[in-house]
Image 1 (cartoon, rainbow, N blue to C red):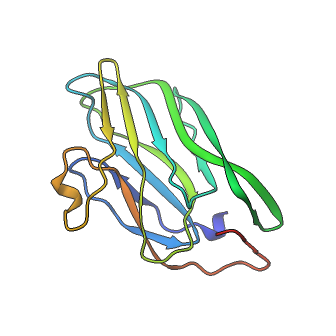
Image 2: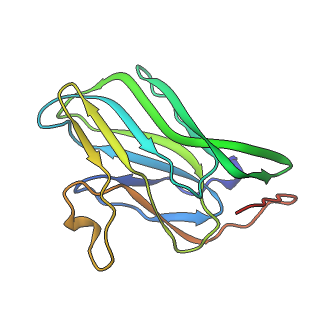
Length: 173
């Protein structure tokens, strides 16, 4: 994995800048930044939906937070580097910690990005708070910019195709 890691980039919600460099078909460190709570209320949970096209993720363990993952069945299964995968992560969930309204933190995970070059990949994100929630789920319509939305979904754009390591054989892409 380390050999395939691209530079760390961020996919940040709200008014924060998004670094867009991710190698198509390569491992990428995705960082979802949370700059504030929900209308003054502390953050107590994060749910990040993993989009179709990403079949392998490795979420980062955060001290003081419980980590879980909801899975989905893949049809057809995908074979990569001699291993067949019939399920993939549908949602990463961190709960049990507390991030104060005026504090900032990142929720990180490694993702094997889709092999399609120049694709925008959106991570629908629900920020759960002591009171209420923020749904960072808005995906721009054609002709509208990401920044024109009140609760835009964090995103990463794939670049050129990452070189494959032999004998990496991936099917059903």
